[in-house]
Image (cartoon, rainbow, N blue to C red; front, side, top):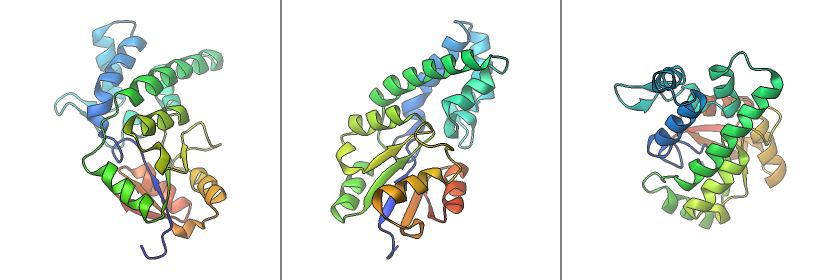
Length: 203
């Protein structure tokens, strides 16, 4: 880590406790999509990776690692392009407002972020949530001032696992990809780090 000067963090599962933050929101989204039909909503949740035995989402599931566009494409495969974008906008609104206001930080993460910032590391967020949702989450956690930028799936042409976010962070900070570590909890984070020649770090 001697040559590392910048760190990109995944958001859900790395900065915030994914299940504590998102279970209620996911259920709300599924019920919204199912128009109040509990049975249909449960089928949508299962398709998105929810395990009804453990009451948790699988780590590399669509809901845990995908974007709202991915969820819409899974839940509404026959929508027109126009209606698809309306559904994405609806889910962006839900996740941006509820996801940020209900964010539960993982134990010790706030102190760790402050320590890294004090040591002059350049910090960023790379998430498949919306950029607005990521920025609001950082504000809710009280750490927005520690970060140079937050990149959602809508901030770059190609979101994770493509390397676009690493390129954008390099452009912003002036750092080389080899000077950046990616800290995350799922396969998309590892794949993005490899694609962007960054250092992959498991959380």
